[in-house]
Image (cartoon, rainbow, N blue to C red; front, side, top):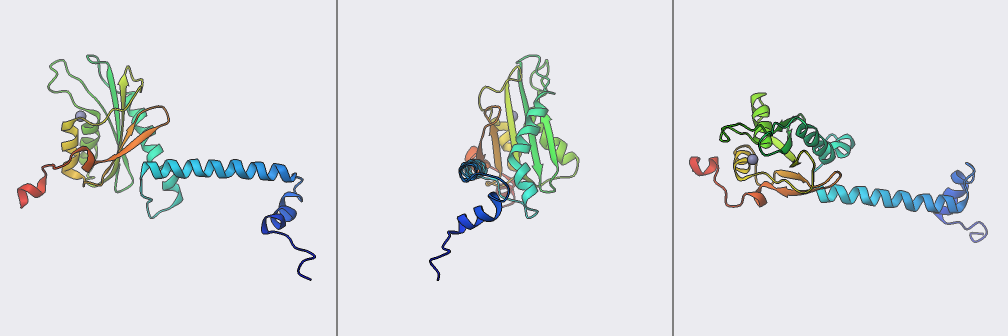
Length: 198
Ligand SMILES: [Zn+2]
């Protein structure tokens, strides 16, 4: 009869795998909830980041925004900012998958100073890359990230030259947190190549 050996699917799993491995039922339930919570947090972070997955798959998922933010933090350590003391790092992800970094480089005459984002763009274009997926940027006094450091107006216009309105800008605002904006949000009603070519 069907009712004699009635088990739910999860009970069958427990019987076959967990009990055989010496786990108690409560241990399996608790660890399952922990695993689900970790997965939910991970997916939430990825959704918040808004980064689309590359056709390549999982490896890109595990590296995208977090990797880019980490590269930006690394680049920030090379910042040359003897006058303002405000160190900035940027990491630009090219369509090829390569990451180009830049830091701010100040100058005693001030005007020749270059922002981290533009340094990264110069690095990428000089290497032959002109199409980009996303950029991460971080900064702070003395290299300590105490809040968001969004691109300045000049850098937004520089990005506009090579990037579309849906280009992702990852603004790092803490050791392990960041927000994501599109270039269209950062630079609405912008002027670009299309205006000249029209
Ligand atoms: Zn700038």
